Amino acid sequence: MMEPKINDYSSEERFLYLLLFAPGSTNEFNERIIGNTWLQKQMYLLKKIIPGISISFDECQFGAFSSELVALQNRNIVEKIIVQKNKVGSMHLSETGLEIGQQLWNAASESEMEDISNVKKFMNDMTREELIAYSYSTFPNTAVNSDILDYFEETRVDAACSLFSKDKVSLKKASSVAGMSVDDFVLELGRQNIPIFTVSESAFKKSMDCLERIR
Image 1 (cartoon, rainbow, N blue to C red):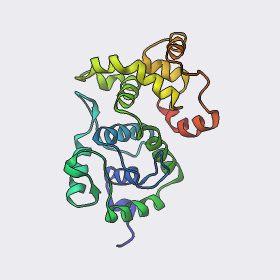
Image 2 (tube, one colour):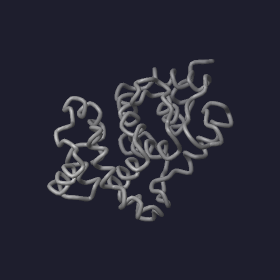
Image 3 (cartoon, rainbow, N blue to C red):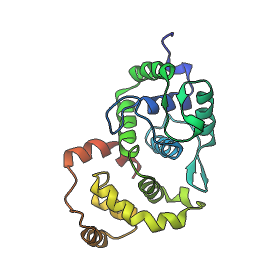
């Protein structure tokens, strides 16, 4: 295969391949993305962080959603660059896609690699409830027309507690995800027997620095 150049691919293609190739919480390259919702939310967050991503998102019944991303994903499944059974469930790059991803990764900037890896590590092992709670509370304008707003409201407090206990978010951010004041959220953590001082400062800073740009 000829060495690909950045200009050989559209912005959407390039960042899709980079996201799929990037290491996540397992620190392994080509870590599977759990499902379509996880792909959509990770790409939306990346778009907020990296100006070069031109893919468009609309508000829909499940929050921020890109039909362009779906079309690109499906085309790459047909072309056997992405592997995903029946277009549902987890997805990863095929051997051909892995070659493309590796070469694009080698050509990416340090900041792009760091941002993409941090977003994947941050979101890829979230539960559906955590993913929805974080996304809807962080980008409330995308949830206005959502069909699952009631579900979000019902699950956001437990999801926020879980995100905090996993060192995903700070106390202040977790309170925001829960829709509570910090004081009330601390009381909720106590009710759920979750220690307040759980976050490793160095680990939290490493994973969250790039996300601070969108807050």
